[in-house]
Amino acid sequence: MSALGYDAVYLIAAAIERIGTTDGPKLRDAIAATKDFPGVTGRTTIDAKRNSEKAAVMLTVKNGRTEFHEAVTP
Image (cartoon, rainbow, N blue to C red; front, top):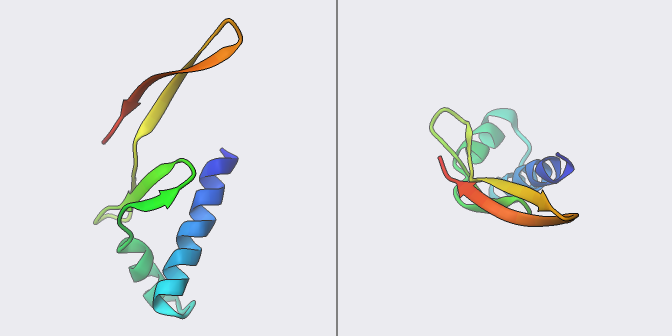
């Protein structure tokens, strides 16, 4: 969960850098315009309803080792 928080903060920071202000309506629109933001949890795109679209990764643990199982993309 902390990685998602990290990505959220950096997504907001990237939006502020793009627009050069923290003005509420401008920042909201800049966040809504985010496409393919490269975060530590993968790429994030914000859709028309301001929801995050990103792949969900499922891992399994076998014999104490984490293994990739599947990625599901919305």
